[in-house]
Length: 206
Image 1 (cartoon, rainbow, N blue to C red):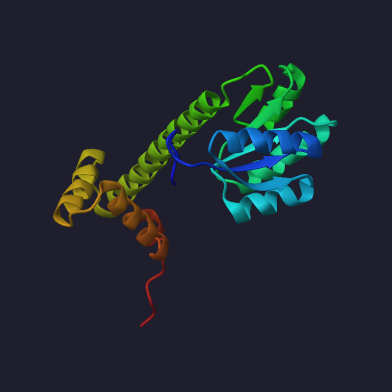
Image 2: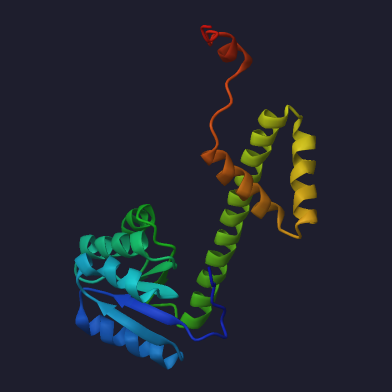
């Protein structure tokens, strides 16, 4: 996943039930040198637009109805692979609590004058989160692959890890790629019966 940095040109989706606020936010984003790729009012279409346009960041404003804003957040979070930021007039603990349940990543208030710095922080934290999430995912795949090798070859954990590492070095591949191949291949193989299960299989009749 590409994570934009400060110097890059951001593609921004903005959403708000109030058209006047949409216009103000769009002007602010454009003044920062970024591009507003979509403006959305209808919560029912917000997710579809986010999935189609693939923005770098989405800004959802709190308009006349907090329920409408929460619905916009929920729909965009479900479909977009970018941080969703709430734009609010002033800190509102109740709204922010509900917004966080729906996956909003951060918020910016009217008192925050330096939007660019706020966006920089959001994007950096989002990138760090996905790096961490990716690390956990890679670790999980490696652990599964070791378990498969331990079962198939009757070896201990250290030996299973060495098998993965040796294959990665031999094939000039990343360890997680080899581990992934072991896991994927294992899904296609029939399960080996345990010794007890094998003893229960009746001998074929002559």
